[in-house]
Length: 556
Image (cartoon, rainbow, N blue to C red; front, side):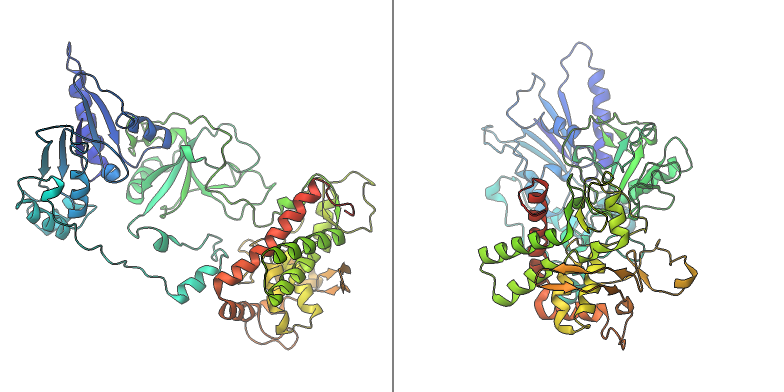
């Protein structure tokens, strides 16, 4: 094996293409096998290239030439007879040297050559450009070490040096802010990438589909068709295809609602990208947008049209499992009355807490939250959605439902029944702060109502003139009526719901705001214990719903 490691994907692609041309001109001779390895491939193409150099495969008489980037520095068990490497920071150089004669199968050792990228640079600006994605100082330091060596076998190399300290350390305030999983004011998720990956990683993900025929539900990418693309390369590519109606590129619409169908001429749940992309984004591109070659990976050339990926039944990635106003677990194929479901979830919560030997106070809070968690399903908006999924006369009209055969889209956009449940509980407790924990656990059991309480950007105020000026949030309107519901040993006696708690500051009726209440809980319990209690309620709900679907309860 001859292994060539360069620092940039574009250089690797260009070098590989040049070698391919030379190999094709070797008429009558046995050309070496060729492989290209970098991080801008789709999964299947990357696996095809990697299979050429790992797994003990034998090469032909002319051997194998591998052109690669940093992708082979770690976690790739290969051994080269000849190694060419561009100058890189010293830890990377040590990793690369470790790919030469790795198995000590060559008695005379491997032939290692390094390419001095800084040898002919004219000024600092040019040096910075040549050094990317690394710093010029790191390359200079590595070059100084290399000039002192005549052999790069492991016994001649000193230690790589200390690891650079992390530049971004999460503080308590940052952790508390990240505990709030509400989307931002434009309905996009909060960016956590600085804490879970290299801050210099500004990639986005792209997948290509034939959009001549699309389904009624949003297209979601599968892992095998996603390609990582640097933000700069993505911008250059998008400029070339912008304005072309046959080469559209879309991003996920976070506020798309089931049943809305297509957004303009785009596929359901996706909006055409007309501005510059941002790191972490997942893009859906039409095949005609090109930019990808199965042999080279992402190139940004619109003329290089990728082959479509054969989709499998594997789990989708990159998409939410539940929309802003969806409740898929309420659609289980059988009707379940509301009081029975509340009882089932409370029983499951009690069993979980006993099995985990939870302390008495937490046990009581979790079980009570389970009893109240779906009281808001008594709301007319929810009941009408569930009843449209039943045959006439299947369930008496005065019976409140928690589950149905097949649910339909809510008449009121973005409706969240768990907010109605929480408001009912707070009203039942006369807005006492002692109810904050149970109320929060009720509101949070779907993960859609947690630390903040505000309307979504596309929500609209009630159109009824008699309700002009009423507050609204998550599909619940001020003064909505919620009918009585039996809650185990307790009972919600029915009444109107107040949203004044969503306002900051003190209110004479509802006292402290939702924000003050939830922040107080976060300070008291901390993010991990609070999230753990949320999970206990959520698991109890999931277990009960699963058993109800299988008709394992006799009182549904």
